[in-house]
Image (cartoon, rainbow over all chains, first blue to last red; front, side):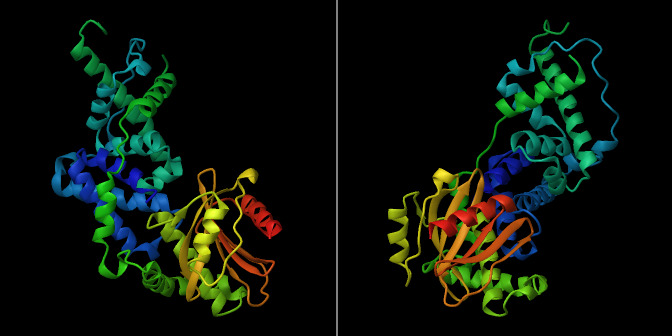
Length: 164
Length: 211
């Protein structure tokens, strides 16, 4: 099952736990087999879109707060930091990065997972998330900035001297 | 650091460091076990393919009627439908390869032991098309050999069986897949792949020359 790894990665990041990721992927895989004749276009984005929709249903049922009022694209722009960036992102602590990514709102998290971790083309991310390609690009850009904010906050909290 | 630089740095950091969760082996097993009875991969395998192919083909028949108007009716249509359906199903994950080997002396006897014919098998690694192995599939109402080749990340399925009568070459694309049917030296081929048309044509020439 060549696309199962990508499916699991997406579900794991959206549900944020192994047990529910398993359930969601299994359900989506069985749906995929049942509705294989609905396949349009390339199999991978098609299958990942099924998985993504299963994740959204799961979130709606189990973590409604995460989706409640999450009109992510309409939220105000985060301000750019006034001071020059001093956080060396390449030297980031792995755990910190994972925590910050897990804490992002779902629409930003899924965009980053599909684009950066699964290395999918913008058009595939758009197809999977059901958003226009322009929205995907602006969402990705905002996701990275939100991530940077959150990393700065984590860094400040763990070492108050770093950014003061 | 500008905003663009910051985004590039973060992108690189995510790619290098964020956790990539791979599906546990037990999940694969659970999914296979949870497939409905008639879809479980019980031997003989082609009973499964037949059951799958029927449901898929009924819808496919309508959708592809136009495409196949140029082909010979009946047997060809059934072949093409089966071939594409089986290819999609295999790449989606059910099972792509029964015997995994780049050695034609392993693959060829494996196939001839299970089929009433012994198709030509060539490793084309030197030309950039690596023989990954083979599987048994079912198309046109009978078991059929599928040679599986890899080019970069693309899979090429070569369905091969003895040609009983001469039929012309046909190629077309459908839903991101390229299909081509041709004959070479008494063997009939269907090639199916998500590879681009130029490379698939190149592959076709190589297969035809080797025969």
